Image (cartoon, rainbow, N blue to C red; front, side, top):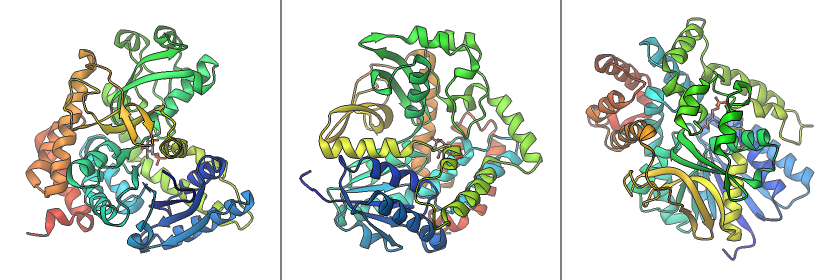
Length: 441
Ligand code: G6P
């Protein structure tokens, strides 16, 4: 890309996470010379957009960099001639997430932002909006890369690849980088000395191997992980310890999100106890956000406040900035991304999105082949992929039957009748954001 003044557009720019992205861009200005950063949001998010935008301007001023920060509700105006578009919006804002987490719990099922019924509904609300964005990009900035953080990131990315002419799309997630950071810390080595071979799906990928100086150190890492205090986790997931013999038997490194699948009843019990006291993660986050925005409002604040690291998405900007830099600078380094499989995992369809290590050049990411997934994890991964495929179909068509089938295929929803109650309740609760289910009725 022979462009010395990059234009980046961030949709969902009023997010509390944006200061981390701005910090990432400031720290890498030599590699990524951004001229314009456009923060786009919806009118309901006006106040947040202004608070975050003003903080971003103060951060850029402090760094004395010529980055123009634009704030707008006009997405098309922003997208025109963009080089990179990052998406981090939440359709329906945090109140929708509260419903995603609370309603399944009412029926005795896990309530989680990206897994189970909550994950399905986030996909149903988000995919149509993301398709609109991708279609607009085809006209307004056909050469731009769409870097999607919006959850469920794997499904949303796959929906774009399959349903939009805009093919320059990559899904990104902060879980692999967090796992890598934890393990590098455990091994007391710099991050760039460590390679973990990740494979699977978003929030469902495993560390298949750990390589240092060309040699596998998986066995050593699995031994270290016997200590629960050393096991990777995320701020948004209760760090319930893994059974050591389970991990040793598995001979792979599970992701923190695998707790929802291998510790389902413990998590459900814990969530229900908190739910009965009126607490869900979404409500905790709502309070954290209020605190963050109060900090952001301070006209003397001109850095990303450390309190932002209490959020599950911490370090997401490293993933985004590393990706942008490698494409812009044609680096050819390895990053873990959500891309079209194309044979990287031989026992998943070629046209499906997987989370794997990729080589990133100016042409974007190319996934590295890992062969077939071990049979010990293949069953679960295939089941989640079936769920994802049907969920995408439901999001695009607005089919009630497909939405119900998706729920029934999900391992966190364990009864078809209860699935129907949850579906009916959630469709009604999210009605305003699900036109595809109501338009023609
Ligand atoms: C993790 C996930 C993200 C998710 C975040 C939620 O980091 O990888 O996809 O958005 O947690 O964190 P929160 O603080 O909003 O619960």
